[in-house]
Every structure is written in C-alpha cells, then in structure tokens.
Length: 424
Image (cartoon, rainbow, N blue to C red; front, side, top):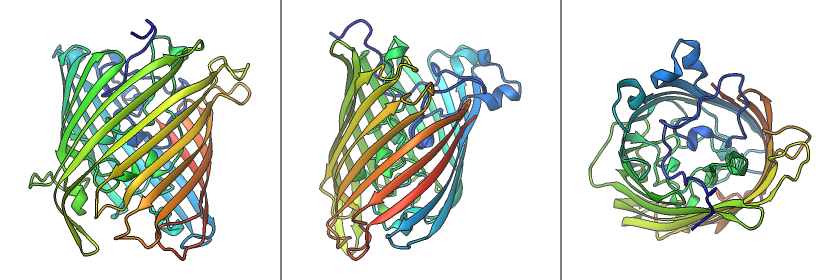
C-alpha cells in the first residue's frame, strides 16, 4: 500500500471536480497543446464574464493557440514559413450541481482550426508541431459532445458520445495529482511534437486531436493509485475518413483500446511517478500503397517520474521530471511500426518564475517500409515555456530532424517555432 499522501490516479478526467481559476489566477505549466490532452482546458473566465456563476455548475471557457514556424535549414522546403491557429470553446455542465442529477455531467466543444503546411515543409512523418494534422487544414467542427455518468462514486464511470480518446489513453502528458499539492507534477512536458499527444505507433488509427471518435469510454478505479480504462470507438479514421468533419459511421471499422495504470511516491523525497500500458485493436480491411490488411493492433506503454524537488530556492515547488514512451504494432498500412520517446522537464527553475517550464525530448520511429524508403526518423526538440500573465504562455521551441522520413534524400531539418497559448 502506498503512503497516505499518495494521490488520485487520473484515469478519466472529471469535469465535476475540475477547478475553475479566475482570469487573473496564475495557472501552472501547461502542455504544448491543451486541446489534445485535457477535456476542459479553459479556465471558465468567459462564462463568468457573461454572468455564469460557479455554483450553477456551468463552465464556459476555452483556449487559443497561435504559432509561427520557419524551416531554418534543410527539410523539404528550406526557408519556408507557416502560421497556425487553433481556437477551442468549451461548455461543461455539472448536472449534479445544476439539477441534482447524481454523478452526471455533459460536455460540448467547438473547434476552429486554420493551419499551414508546417510539418510537411520539414519533411517529417512524426510531426514536430502537434497543432496540425491531415487535411483539410482549415476546418470548423464539433470537437466533443458527451455525457458522463458516475455509477459508483470515485470507482466506476462511463463517458458516451463524441470524445477524444487521447485524453484517456496513452496520455504521457497527464498531470500527476496528489492530496499534497506540492507533490503534483503539472503537464509533464510542454514539447510540441505530435508523438507527445498520440503515441506514434497508433498515429493514423487512434482518434484524437483534431479527429475525435464516437463511442464509449469506461473507467474503473478500484484504488486511488490504480485504474483501468476501456474504450470502443468508430474506427473509420484508419481508412482515411476525417471523423472530425463527418457524421459517426458504424460500419465494421472500430477502434478498441484498453489501458491499465498506476502511480506512486518514490524514495525519501516522495517523488511522484506514474506508469501505464495498453493494448489496441483496429478492425476492418485497411489499405495503403497497394497493400491490404484485415485489421491491425499493437501495444504501448508510458511513464513519468519526478527526480528532483526544490532545486531552485526562489520557487519552493521547483522540480525536474522525466518521461518515456514506447509503442509497437503489426500494421502494414500505418506510417510507423515502432516508436521510442523520452524527455526531461524542469518546472520553476529560473528566478521566481514558478509557472515557467523548460524541457527537451527525443522521438525515434521505425517507419513502415511499404510507405517510406527511409527506414527511420529521429527528432530532437527543446523549449522554454514562459508564463506571461494569468493563463497566457509564450513558448519558443527548436526542433531538429536529422533524418526526415518523407524522403531518403532530404537533408536534416532545423525548425523554429514561437507558440502563444491563451486559456480563457
């Protein structure tokens, strides 16, 4: 049994217990794309400004991401610039507060995306910037529309509807939360690369940002330090259907996934850590580059561990954490067959800037030989996420891809990004 201060394993995020900071509240470090990692990424400021009261159980907020990118050298288009914008507006309803419907909640999100050819300009298969995805690159969509019901308090809950499975599965960026808030790890990294938001070995099959899935997620948390998640979704993304802008289809293509996870406190410093692993299966006949396969599946794992605490005298909760990822599949049609990722993140290491973070990471993928002539792609990335004011962050990021996977003749790509993140 873990010590009494061991905290809740966040198996499925619950809007009924989510905090709603004010516009002027300082929020901790955030992921590089909160829209890809959090069911309720905003602060609720928009709703309060319009007169919604917290006690009503209705939260209206969202986020805006904007960035500018340049391929400084190498890649597919040396010197190319691109600009991206992603606006998400979120409405969360705590039905227990609003109408005394025990354990019930509803969520709705609208997403507006306008992006350039950022990743293709660098020639990367994995993607160094997670704000983008497959075309169309300019889209307006209903991103989420779900009903959550808690059937056994703090033990069993189910979410049905239009959801983003990457919030619940393979989410290495998931914060580690404890009863003693000083032990918490905020968003484990602010890196922008795509494999941080969806394990690269499931890229192209697993619904996520900005192609959600329609289905059901069941969460079982028999103890505060252990969980089991099971999901069953429309799997038409694997055959190229853009699920974010098309109605649900239940036609034999299904994406099924299960994940178990745990957390702990390690050593005399009570350093928090987490670990999870999962299995997934995609059904239906899949094809790519003249190759056909009846279904596919794979395995993944991820984890994070705080390794140092109180390293900066100016920020009592300053810390350093590590994370790691792995994934493998038997696919003949997905772009990546094996993935290895790792990184390091520092929180509050500079001066008295408690909400700043910095980090570096590496992503290595073995590419599908049916689709790519280059056998693998390596990507390195480093960032500094500066807290500007309240819930606003500015983040310069440097990415280097020595072996861009789009073509074996491409030279190594050096890309620079400046990302603005505003939660409201």
